[in-house]
Image 1 (cartoon, rainbow, N blue to C red):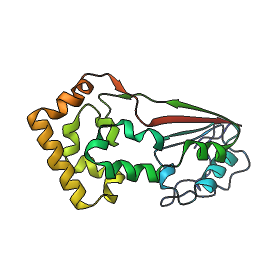
Image 2: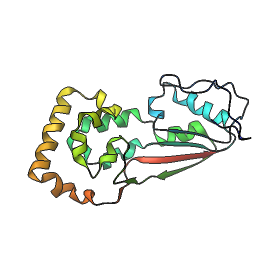
Image 3: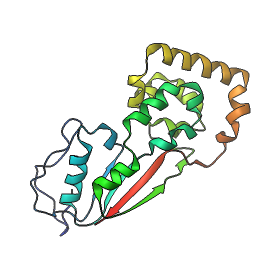
Length: 190
């Protein structure tokens, strides 16, 4: 983290496990605070959001997924268990906004076709990638899905790719420059 005056904060900051640590910084110590793809893993969302707000005199920026938009992704047709798992894990945008307070703006983020991040929607136009167990393991939702559901997903998607069914239904995504799925950017100003 960088302080408002441009200096580095003391060494006692960082994430511990799936939570946060009280940074022992004066209020407020930083010009801004940011987190990406993490709020759905926090044990105490409200305490984590309060800590972000406490240490930042300026905006708090959060990149996360809107659970209400997850079903826009074709994966819903092949692995509804993965989508429903994500929907249960991601906090609502309203809950995050209330926890941050101030003026909150939410913008949807288009996901580029060649996105190299390992979240499932990054493969919106490259479905073959999700047949790779390593690509699935990079997304924590799959660790909550039964082995039977994963096997069914693999069989069904592989079949539909081989016989052209996936391309008939979703092939336009292979050339679509971006996809507006569930990815959002939340900017809260005091």
